[in-house]
Image 1: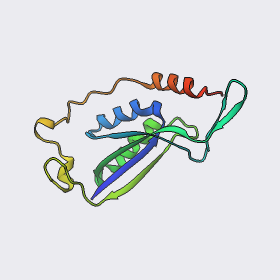
Image 2: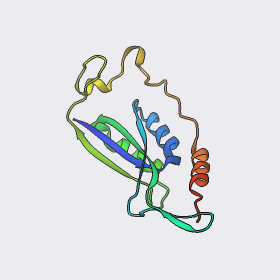
Image 3: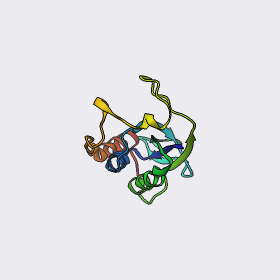
Image 4: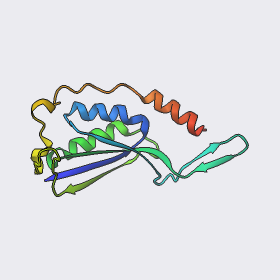
Amino acid sequence: MLKKVEAYIRLEKLTEVRSALVEIGVPAIDTVEVQGHGRQTGIRLAGRHSSYTVDTLPRLRLTVVVSEDDVAQIVEAIRENAATGTQGDGAIYICPVDNIVRVSTGEQGADVLVYEGDIDIQGMLSPPPDLSDFFAFFLERKYRIED
């Protein structure tokens, strides 16, 4: 059976999480920048004349569809590499997937997860560049985060 693993993580953790997933052989990873909040319900920021609360924070939604056998390893890789030990680290959701259809060929089912031929990227993926400093700088400038 196929499973969709959907993780909401901090932007600055993308490099570490993606590197870990590539290292264990996950060939396809989708990411989308999202806004939201969990139990922390936002952060307090300092503006020019006053402070205010931002209710939703930027996060990344990272999605992979894998075999049920690989779910535990993938969840652990995401959790280990996304954790900072503070509130707002994110959440991981695991959902069943009834079917997958490859648009270009019409293939269906678990065979869609196997890459063959000239689009075979197994073993050819290199770790992504480290963007954690960039994301930290960007967030600091955009939201003027105060301790």
